[in-house]
Image (cartoon, rainbow, N blue to C red; front, side, top):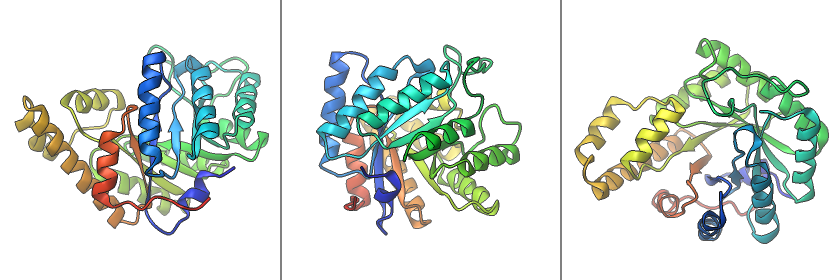
Length: 295
């Protein structure tokens, strides 16, 4: 089995993609069309999300298992601690190992139903993401990633404390962190600088959203809490009623953002696909990203 870290240590820039588990048979066809279209580009790895409260757990396991057994791709499965006992988490990790999934993104997760609600741990579960990282490490030879926020987690009181908790997750045994959505490359680079200034050398990976529709921009900003910079609003506002113009302008912005990140030494760009392949394929082509070939 191949780890995410192995796939990233190529000495050249790579890209990766994120999918979510299908809700029904039609969604599954759409997902697998995207998987096959992107497979030929040889992304370094592909991640599959895990629903709040574990309600998509079986679909996540099934999807990552199929990717491991039916494709040439390296899968990374998400795992959250929400509403799970330690025994259940152990079982999930056992299932991942059994289907050939060696890479796990360990996330505490949001409260089911209300992401802003009170986070209440399972009475026989875990309270913090760092505990989940430790559990994953205890149960097998997994490569482990964690989540990071350029703006600080909504429950953090300030960036200083947020940085401290992120470093605790990394030091608990994580190999890397994937930064959640941002629109300005400087915001990710400041996060990377904060981690480096604290003496942590773990890899920081930016999560990239292809900007193709106004709805996508508005909804993801609302869900993630990522601020829309004034310069981005000024760039895209003229195309509010012009879908083709919005897509063209949005993709130009993201292309330039990615180029800035690559120029700053970022070696992996993680694209949120929404189970589609066209925008990601276009960005990869524009950026001239060389697919990872090792592992």
